Length: 318
Image (cartoon, rainbow, N blue to C red):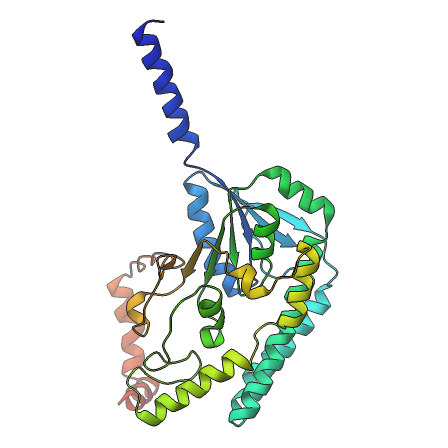
């Protein structure tokens, strides 16, 4: 075979490798409302770069939707929850969080917080069961041969799907109360001697008594408070995988943790190579200010300035 022909074939193979190989199929396990809006911008960017994005969406949802211009795919699975069930969960938790929690003393505050987060835990567990125990859905996901799963681990299940499908797992989150999963699943070192526990409202410049208080917070979150009902989740995960396991163990297999904040906004602490601070990825560029006709602006503002309402405004501002 001529040398030129060999060179052409080699270039064709390399172009195929570097061309199509850079794009992949991404499976997404999302969470409603602000979590989804933060994640959607990242998904739009993945889509623009040629990746195929598929979002697992329950049949009953409030916010998991995109405009028709987007090519993000949705794989909708039937859920046992009705829209009234969702409203009951979100309204009940919102009322407790906004109206009742701030009025509680120290210990009652965290007891009520435990009650609130376990309501979400039961809701997330129902969604996970509806997806994982759906044989048709799981068969379709297996046949789709996804390259990676991107999961908001504020709702467990993305880690379980990654284990079943045997694909890499990337987490996206801001933080967990007490940073328990970052520490015990991600292995992130957070020494309580100088790193304030999340929700402790302490700063990095702590007195000796504040450091003692910080250690008490750490012990509480590590051994008492559970953001997820771990007994139920551990049992469910073990039944699905056919072997004893825990939520902590399954989440620890994540390949990357994307933290939605800036490093310089965090309290200084050690970090790990698989933790990446991605603050700003979910922020859209600011739109330019509209052009205003200066004549119209003056005509609109001057009557107010020299009237009684203008006097009131300037009096209040001073």
